[in-house]
Length: 118
Length: 108
Image (cartoon, rainbow over all chains, first blue to last red; front, side, top):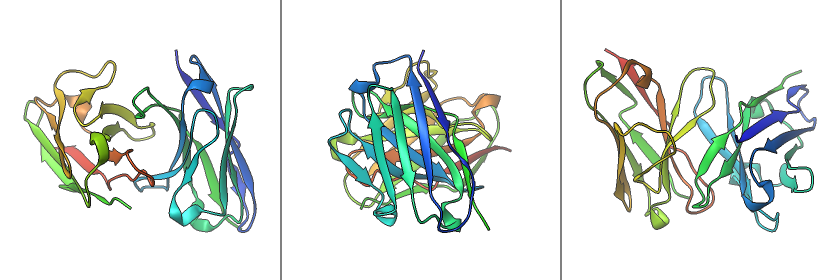
């Protein structure tokens, strides 16, 4: 069965960096695009970034461009999100999600909490 | 950027009733790349509907999606106790892949 397990969250000071990972299993990781989506405490879902199955195309939320970088290692079945220059407003649960064959995000991990605080 | 507006913000209904949730887009959603998700407290979102009308694997047939272009609807034909949750729409046709702000479905 499809499993997505996020890790790497924690408490970081404003201006700091963090790299999130999403370990995938139960499907052919190298065949599917992947998303990162976040959710601030008590708030709605916010799309963060998408990467094509082969890593050749990447898209980002306009508000995050230049600070966040999505990447993947298909040999390790792992998705990454490098987050730099973190701000208090980046505090959220970060989810990874795979897409299905018609591009809809169908399976989601349980999320990892990132807290930006001094 | 496509902005999705969901209405109502909160919907109060009783088990057994019919729920109708709306998602309106600021511009046409390409190829009906519109999804609906259900989220319960402390859980990840669950895909219910994709392509505006197709039910995801394992989703009961009381959930149905309709619409195209800029107007989309999620209908729950007869509410079960486990259906009370927050529902989000998302367009995944063009980046940025925006979400609506959510509709909270609560027990009346």
